[in-house]
Length: 319
Image (cartoon, rainbow, N blue to C red; front, top):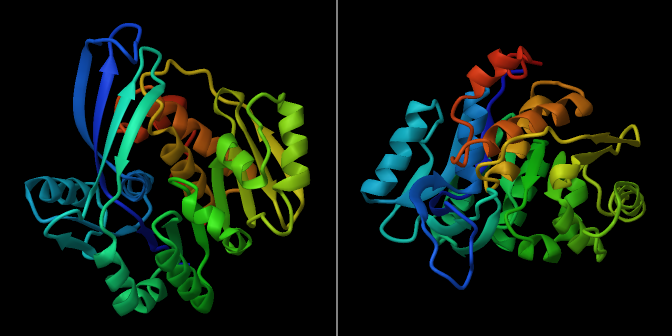
């Protein structure tokens, strides 16, 4: 099968502040400040392109120098940007993030982009775009209308959809979408919110039990459901085989954890698309997340070098 992955999501400009010393929320903190290209859809598209997958990004950017810089960077990375629309204003979101001295996110504020252009594109060209795709990756918290339209088109065209959350507002109002997904990856807080359980204070075995009883179920489970647990690793479920597995985290010197979720998703989904078994795809996602949080970027800029260094050949396998 010829691969052609479409990523439907957002582009953000991230303003990140890195504290040099212990971070005090109510005090004055010295450190570094950087503007980087971000957004869940944009991050995933660039990551997948680095993993030798043909990727098209379906999103919007502003019609200004910053938007043009985003497009040029993606184009240089091999991402198809023909269906990225140009907006006069608010085509991109903005994310203000504070990273403490341990590399953890200490606080953030998000401004979502205006999704009007993306909604219009899906109405006018969505059928053709989905038809031309072998796999679709959907940022699930765009809005209910967009999410439903894309899911309906993919179901009609029998295209697998891989869902990634940015926040849970849309997902909580549309939980019936989850079983229709090929794969859904979220963190323990998000999984706990979905099932109405506080997983944060539980042991690994207790978390696994709660997920098996309440999340890895017919009403909520996608074909492949994966819950990341931060430093504890991740738990995954194969609905077809009923396999429940665990993968430990990789000990890593953390610089910035803010890109970990997108990186884990990218590595795991790339593995699944290329035909890896679920447990091996999860291993791929774990490695990509580890490599990403060891840098101050939202993506791992040297995936190939890391792959060669560890002799793991994660991304050269095609189905």
